[in-house]
Length: 66
Length: 129
Image: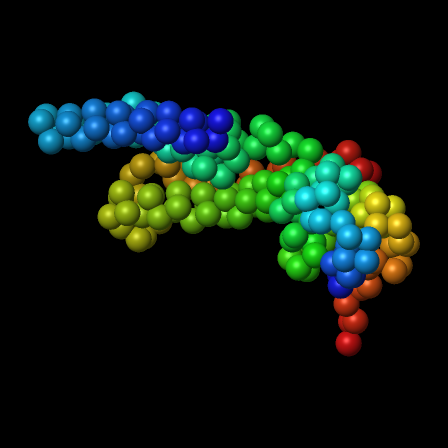
């Protein structure tokens, strides 16, 4: 999935480390998701959206199947 | 803690390899205990380097990416073991014709690598039906 985590992190002035703390995962996990190396579970996607103050729809977009 | 585990695991591996190497050079003996304990020590070292814990992943149980890495590694590791066990069988026997193989227990182990995953999947899938 494509995501806008970095964009919303910068708007909220939240570091990867702080977001990782808020979501109870490692900073490496946030970095991997941000760089599209790993798709998060539904629970973590909800946690990320909640902690960034946005909706899941705003945060994640599926890749086009075309 | 990670550094400590890496150092202790390295010393353990060096001690076992050194002892095994000495017996190999001095008496031309390769002990099975050296192979098994050497592999255990190597696994401790690799776990210490990767996870910071010699048992592997003890401090990463809550992290989703670590769980993903462990799950994927287990799947890849299974297929690697399948290939390696077949390679050991053919290399140790020195033949490529299946019916010329004399080491039946090892042949059984290679056969088991083909059926362990399907059997496990069969029983585990029952849980969801």
